Image (cartoon, rainbow, N blue to C red; front, side, top):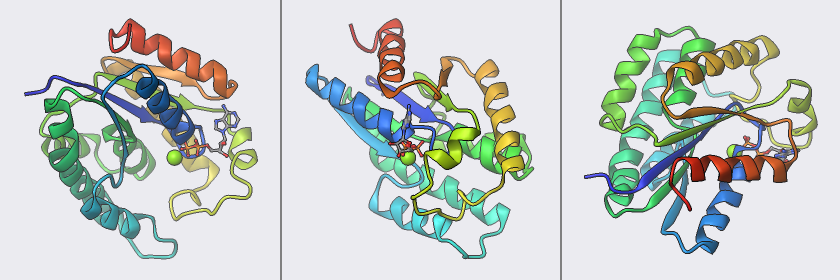
Length: 206
Ligand SMILES: Nc1ncnc2c1ncn2[C@@H]1O[C@H](COP(=O)(O)OP(=O)(O)O)[C@@H](O)[C@H]1O
Ligand SMILES: [Mg+2]
């Protein structure tokens, strides 16, 4: 039985999800909240092993296999970590969840959104976020914010792919309850203030 709150940060690479997830985690800890910070793909030892396969540069991973690996990681992570934490009343902050799979494998690679939706429901046992924050930034920042970073297999996707995903994220925000667009072009502090405001509006913090 779910008692906690499930907050998901979504959006393409380098738009500031990890930065904001860590800041939010620290804020909630400072306010005395019982909170965990986790991510997908990964979040548990088994799921992190799956993550290594999915993100390994140069490895031949076909779109369908990729989708099923993400869902395998999600099933493990949800059962082993997210649902128990929510049952204990914790706030769970998770970087990436079901919307990422729709964006990358659905809008990006063209796998049926219905198929992905069904797999998402199975893998999550119908667990849905209480709040989904979708970070989107202008494309000009993609290089600027990642110039010196190691580029994994998925980060090497091209501009057209990123634009398809952006369109997908915008459509999904419209049809997903409690999903909000976060303007990731803004300064780190401004974004954090907006995130905290949304948590207040959703009665996750006072
Ligand atoms: N609002 C921001 N403005 C400028 N740079 C940022 C902002 N948020 C994050 N960054 C920087 O951009 C890079 C990618 O951020 P990160 O949080 O790792 O993104 P993600 O987890 O979405 O891939 C990092 O170098 C980070 O310090
Ligand atoms: Mg990150």
